[in-house]
Image (cartoon, rainbow, N blue to C red; front, side):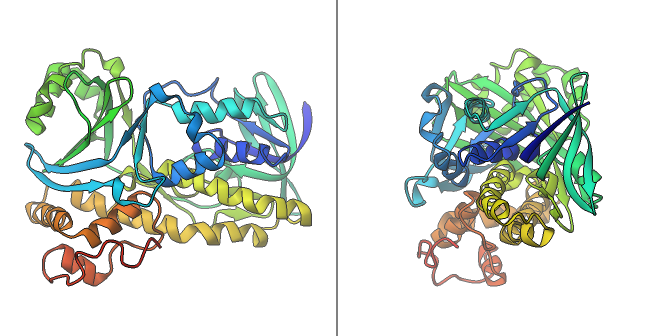
Length: 424
């Protein structure tokens, strides 16, 4: 049995855990990070850095250091009916600079940059192939953890344990914090295709229980995000690449040459979707961040971004905890109180979008398309949606009156006012 001591023990080196570790390192706080994977992630995943995520990377000194040949700036996102008719265009250029854009990266580029920066920091030890096995407690307070590191059993004594280990968090389970884990009936098939015809702006198609997103990426690549039933990935593959291509062509005929560049299932992956709600994110000596505390549907386009913001909010509190030698739930709850309202709003908004965007109900689909069309003509409401997606707005984008206006049931006398109240 190996025994070690540290200030902070982080379980999970994903989007939130890695950001937290690097931010702690930049403050010189001794940290051990345990990651059960054998190394940095290599799988296919879609990567869109929203403005609030860009702010985090900028604060860490990494945004300007991302490889130019692996990032792509996108300003306009067009929402369309299946078949190609445009309903609404959202332009990130309307946001205040310098984060008035979306940044699409090749898979894992930002994550690798964070992990590489961690490896250069002397105060942080990042341990791969390290599986969390339990918590250490004294007088009811968490004082460390146990783990299996390769073949070795390790005890890590820590002043605080951070669970950043995803929606199925083992740390959350060990803390006996109950979780409402909802798995959505739909997930996304992700594909990385070749831009054999120009695609400068993003396109997002909605129809009867149909969603297809097309996002230009660096290296003359295009991401496709296609909604399929959870558990159906193998059956989609069994039907063959040609069948999938034909389904996509029916949705967006203009992109047929791009769809034809799918030649191997290795160009694809499946992304399940889920939501986590918990009554608390903190305990004496421990805290949850990211999906362990609040996984959300990707319709919010904020899941990974919110984990990063969690990390930066917590890292601002930790030096105070260390100085006072106080790691109580009462003190740590300041982090939760700061973050929970924003996260709760985004979870609710994402679930509303699931209801309207994923629908097969013609009445709901009619209302959805009507709202998109209204947003296209209403800069005020469109800006509210954009600033929310960008992670810059903490209040709900629509009041009840706004909803009636968006659905076209009431006129909006302020429709031409761009962000009259600013970003909240």
